Length: 472
Ligand code: NAD
Image 1 (cartoon, helix red, strand yellow):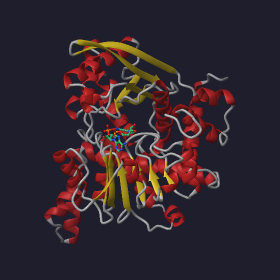
Image 2 (cartoon, helix red, strand yellow; image 1 turned 90 degrees about the horizontal axis):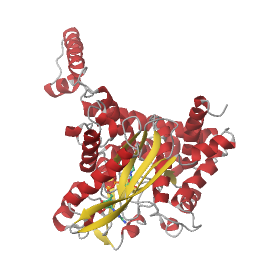
Image 3 (cartoon, protein in one colour; image 1 turned 90 degrees about the vertical axis):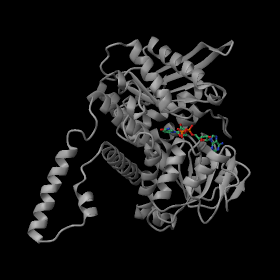
Image 4 (cartoon, helix red, strand yellow; image 1 turned 45 degrees about the vertical axis):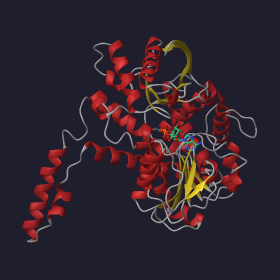
């Protein structure tokens, strides 16, 4: 997708990389090796659709092999092309480095509009894509581990793991060949909502950081902040839900059919119900209809979360954006020009490669679960509960006071899988935000947060290449 300077999406990522690499210490060869895509697999395969044969165009790009396996989602969209998949794969490398997930970046895509196919046809396309990946050794728990992305979900991941396992009989770690699986198929609890939850944790951390809030002239905390979310898919819906559940005011929501706005706030659950029954978010009671999704982005708010597609904020509409914080839920929602305009206006742009890393973080947890063949919490939940019980009993005996039944339940609770996953994700998002802030401070705040995040990523990948010893 182009922008004002006619840079492709991948060139845009390269431009951001170059901007940041000036602040690192690596020689040009290492920087070049970090920047390029290591393996690009472009494929075409036939699938019978109805009474015709359709030739399907698809890709898998492994951007970096500095750590294996590679990791990255698979998207189904008519916009899929090699440049886009390369850009998204590169962002995955930097994203994994930022959140300390020990994987190289990858991405896949199939150029289809999934809405044009029956479930049976989608299954045929997905299984064929998976077997093409197996044929070229482009998938496997130690090679390359796909995940859901735009237009795909747990259902597609189940088809992929089933195809992989049937082509690799007896491979004990086969479940780890893909993440984002339903829990019944080896998935981990908390994965579905992970990216949206990560977006929430990340933006909440910005709002909990006194210096940032002072700079924006905003009060601390997430409560009462006015939020607009674009896209009510996996990332957008869950982000909106966690903002809403934690006291933010969702003033605007946008989908491809248009948007709705109400400065007093929208009930996210009711909007989703309304869309289910009417087929559109438009005409929601007491809300004003926005003619387009893009127009919704320009409404009054504190926090804007574009969580649908890339390049939705360009040099053209950036000057009209009113938000003080933009949290990039989607990958690449701002073109580089838009980014510059908004940063110059003093907007805090929380970059995609950090903010939407919740999905890959929890994918990493899912992969660990698959390789260890045991549910998180299975070994220690009961132990923690028994220990908490002993502590509570001792405290009650010593003080002569009894806690209420509700308090008892809360205090005794040992961690379930979902508790551990949320806790690991929260810790990751908070820790990584402060790593980026430290990089910003070390550059005397002279760069934007994306550049600082890039320097954090380049430093980690660069050191990894140096330690591999391939540049003696
Ligand atoms: P999804 O398919 O679940 O949801 C996308 C939503 O956006 C859909 O509801 C779609 O109708 C809507 N949409 C399409 N065009 C729109 C427009 N012009 N305006 C408003 N809404 C529009 O996809 P997703 O998984 O939520 O991914 C969204 C973005 O987040 C993508 O950029 C993806 O790369 C990125 N992302 C996803 C994950 C993940 O775990 N799913 C992780 C990291 C990044």
